[in-house]
Length: 217
Image 1 (cartoon, rainbow, N blue to C red):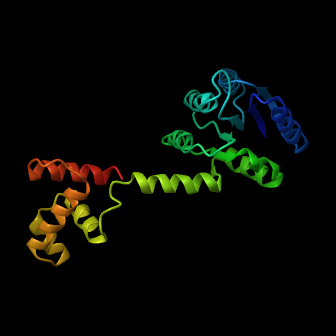
Image 2 (image 1 turned 90 degrees about the vertical axis):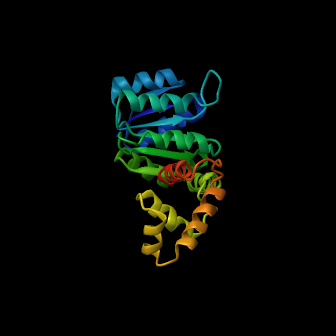
Image 3 (image 1 turned 135 degrees about the vertical axis):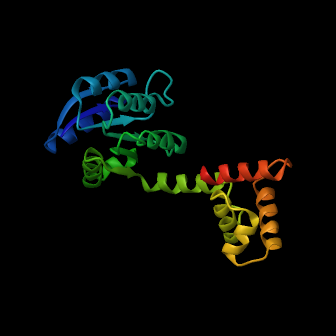
């Protein structure tokens, strides 16, 4: 594979160059900042790029932003991001680039590089268009989405009612579909409004807001 490496830590960068070269791959560029990464991806169109999240000048998210920009300029350009810690918001931003641009995305903790065979396998899968996420990243993504999910407080029956509301059905039609009374449906609808903390406006307005919340999740 033809590979670009972007990491401001010289020892890690040179270590990756040696590891990949000895494994039969060609490192076409090894750079230390985000701007150079974008330039290298545009110039070389590599099979995959390995990118550190934190790079100069602020050592926050320059690497990630450069990776996103590289995929904008070279759609479907595979990127494997390495991070010292789990940065859930960064992982979310990176995964958002798969929409309409294909897969070819990976997010691993730097510790995984020590497991050479697993690291090289992850690199191959990303280059082939797959998505590779560190198990710790997956766990934290799920945990955050559970916390952020506005529907998490709804009972299974209330979710059913909301799904039917999203189909445009009236309370009477929902009652027929679920074989319950109109009064039971009205109670479920009131509970949905309360749990979604929708403002006390007209019922029709709240129904629209409830359906929009359901469709976004």
